[in-house]
Image 1 (cartoon, one colour):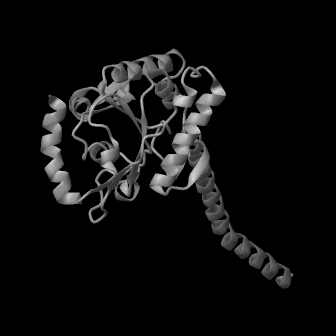
Image 2 (spheres, helix red, strand yellow):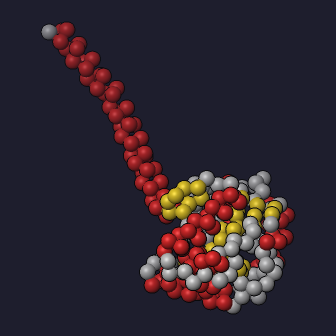
Image 3 (cartoon, rainbow, N blue to C red):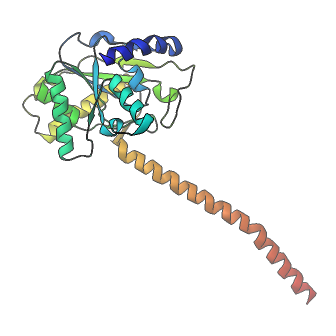
Length: 262
């Protein structure tokens, strides 16, 4: 019930202020379990991704969103509960298996499950390699997978932004259902899981128009942060050297003057 209350409040405001657009919403079945496999560009995806659907969309989110303290923690828990997020432990290992079981339970109950195969938001607007959990869920649950692409949300509210930019219209595209029946019963085969995941990511690339990068988003973020840190250090060293040059020139000029006096 809380989900629909939040949506009833936010929906008219979002339509009025941002004028979002949609394509292919008819590709989402009106009933029965289905996986929405989406790109993840921005925090704004949580607002606009399910805006045009008359079905409740449930997503899996890290448990940290629900365990914060104080007013901020309460607001975070209320928001993510309101947008249909179910808390999971994303630390890996056995926690990953538990997350998959939670996702399968949601599908077994006939719901719409939203998954971001990249595992985290893109830090630069490009599309990154998908993790195979989405493939396992699709094959084990034997449900359709619909590519679900956010458009312009990165430009509207890039990572680190507190408020969205006005004047940029966010969009949502729903692709045609992907058929993986040929792989049913093969969910333990790692090569099959990678093939299914790559097919999903290719469909997302075509739908979103993003540039694809064949590496995991989390690794790319670490590399980008390291490169930024190194560039900052290099700039600091360059500035330090630049400050030394006048002093060095003065010392050389003084030395030359002393030599002439002698």
